[in-house]
Length: 340
Image (cartoon, rainbow, N blue to C red):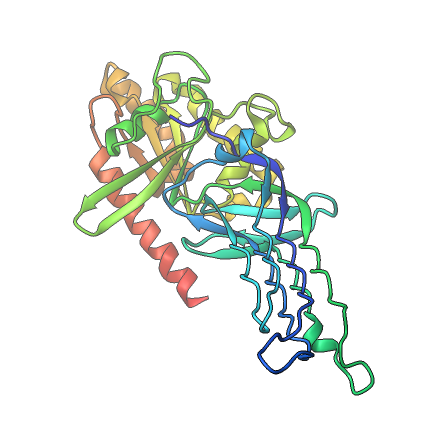
């Protein structure tokens, strides 16, 4: 399985234009034919294309130099040289492309099949047929091809998903993802099992699916880069809906957990709190009696009554109801986006 890589620096070089040709017609009974040198071919472009089958920038982790093909030389009989082949580089959907020197954003590839030319090939040089004049009928000059563009790029991936799972380490996010989708994230009973994002596709019924991102657990101070910090937070910016996954077994502390999570999002980017969200109180199977459960829920119902779902990612209790709740809020969000 490819390692998850979400930022790389690469060098791209478009192809150089081919040189023009110096040539003269050589025909029977025409000993001194005119110039017929053809133009050189254009150099190939370097083009990025967003591919939904790719989920990491790992392919650019070891190989960082990329060059398109040069144009071929012009030929006699005014024949143009062959253009160089474009170099197509596939990147994940959600890749932001920046000029490494200036920091300028050159493009944001958010749709499958979207393309971006990051280096244009040089024009082929003109052959000597272009330089004939009444006073210079046999020019022995031709142009060299123009050099192709070259630059260093920063590729930064921000995952695109319908739902982003937000929670502290060991809250049960990975277990939930493995239950609701075919994704198989690493799961263990200690913090920071999830060291990189995992994507899962949830299928409610035929034709009705949505994508869930299980992201590394937050800790207090994550907005400053503590723990996995920005490696997590930048990916949540693309999600439509947030699902706060909280450990119900922490009982009275669970309300404070939600406040800390929201504060970390706010300190990183206040707009994250404008996203629609639901709350999954996980591990309900570990609460021994109804009295203790009601005591915890009373703390929540005062502030978050309509957004709460009691679930057990281990047993599946309440998960179906949660999925339909997520589907409804995703549908509402998409309709609002389309009308804006």
